[in-house]
Length: 243
Length: 248
Ligand SMILES: Nc1ncnc2c1ncn2[C@@H]1O[C@H](COP(=O)(O)OP(=O)(O)O)[C@@H](O)[C@H]1O
Ligand SMILES: [Mg+2]
Image 1 (spheres, protein in one colour):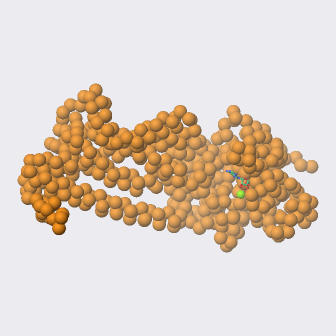
Image 2 (image 1 turned 90 degrees about the vertical axis):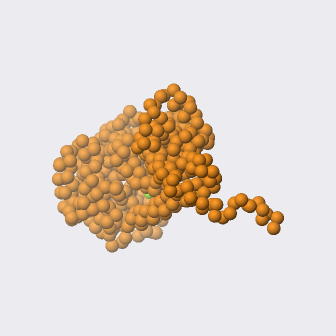
Image 3 (image 1 turned 180 degrees about the horizontal axis):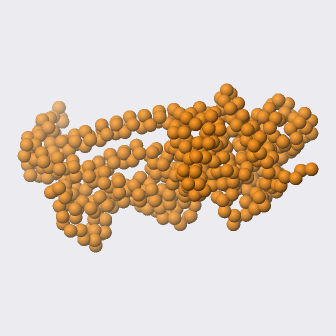
């Protein structure tokens, strides 16, 4: 066949040549931990700003509405890698973080800028999740609360937000999954997460393919069961609401 | 002679939607006296809900006045939150707070607004639950209750604020037929206790029996008002006659 020699030096086995594992396995273990920390911490950090952005977006004040809209548009319409670079070299070129190492492998002078960039990005997306969640709460809830004499803010705080947040928890968990994947971009700025680990192993062992296959497998084994779990919880929640 | 003071006086109340294209209410006048029970009837889409919702400003009137205890609620400088405390409202779909227990549903507003201490509010809630025969539901969540139970709890949630008037918007329309009675019984009870009530309803039997005055609305206007006996037995306006011939 004309294509038979295209793959001459790439036997199927080379995808799974995990001979580096005994020596370099620790790169992957630490990479997983780093990745999970980036994803979880950045989404948690995003929650409060996102909530504020969502409330601003729902505000009747045109200026406040516009500021929040601009933020969301900016972060959703530019690549994460560009945002990361600007925040890393720009913002954290000015703010100096001491080189201190957490758990022996998390250099906070890299981790903090990374997590801040991911959180700022994520808050634009989470803001839209919150906004949809707030709008999804039945109008009758607000009317009942206002008819009892509660103010708009008391109603938001005591009646609407608790219901909205419960409804968006699955979407929030999905955002963490997205961040597990997206955070791979932090490898370009030397954050020792999973993708960085794969790159490092590839370059020091000259095994160019298998480290990435392994990284892919790991990402998949984290995200696929997690998203299935979230789906199941979501179904259960919906059934509970109907009762 | 009628000596009870006016509690609500509506003057030329107009409500338009969609930049004036939809006229939901057109220059309506109505007076409700303290302790009076007024029923509002009329075909669907005639503006009954809009009228009721304008009374506590859930809908903002386009023009006109709503005097409540002498204060014009349509005046922008009025703090509507203060007046809403005195106007209980009951909705067709109950609108209990699903994330709160029955007790929390009842005590949230009086406690948040610092009208009662949590202990006082709880005592009041227990007394109200006792009154409707549901004391054992105190720690249930709304989704464990039947429609009739939900609506009766929605009513006492409003009563917990010790309102001066209760507004009902088709409180039995979303109920299974076998649960209508328990809600109407509670409302009848309230009326007997002297509560001022404005009730939008399709329950003509209830209107006839409990209301002192029945208002007929059609296409955004109050077309006729009279005692139930007169309005049901000798309707004057042809539209009233037509409507009653269909529903009675
Ligand atoms: N939010 C709204 N926007 C536009 N039109 C509305 C709105 N609410 C009510 N309407 C219109 O106002 C009229 C009166 O409605 P409503 O007060 O709900 O009638 P009823 O309660 O008697 O059935 C209807 O024609 C309805 O379509
Ligand atoms: Mg209606």
